[in-house]
Image (cartoon, rainbow, N blue to C red; front, side, top):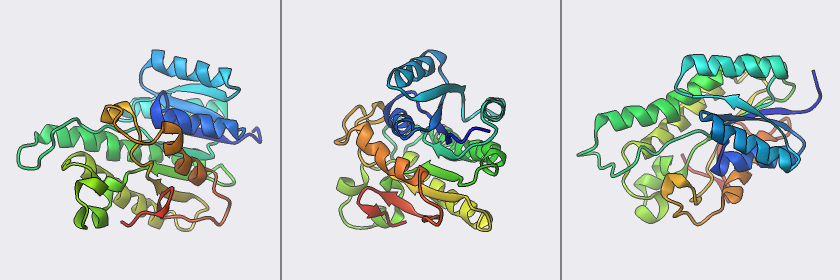
Length: 243
């Protein structure tokens, strides 16, 4: 196996995911660009390669068991291991999401991608992460999933509008992350949640105030933590996010 670090970033064909892939690539990593749509995936890989990144496409639908299994097989064949998994793929479910009127199907769809999809991908990649000397898992969460911030003063200015599908899906993801931390406590896998901040992406109609590159910074830092670094944390650029 090569000494080059290998990463898989889900939802990496655009936005924050693309910038995470670009940032890791700039550090000399080989990066798998996980994405469903071939045209967008191929375009992202080509753009990254033009920038000098050792990028490769990974067909990946996080809601599909066979797709995830095939992605694990592809990485195993190409690299033999995985050093960092960044679970970035996610959806908002659209709006409005008032709890009194939301369609239950919207909640199911969001949880399937934002939570179950992360579990599905993580479990498929754990054997490959186990072959790494310094494996890292980063789950892209959001401060809207912080129960402390949701229940505190500030309202929409700190946690966004009421969103009964999206915001609780990130709280759910945070809770799931901690269960992995507990189960894998005797391993050398460091597992953390990252909040990118309010980034201008198509998920929010490009209303965010941060660039995708800025939003990628915390995830890149957590994916490249030194041995002995933190695990079981929830971080943003400014430091720790309260649960």
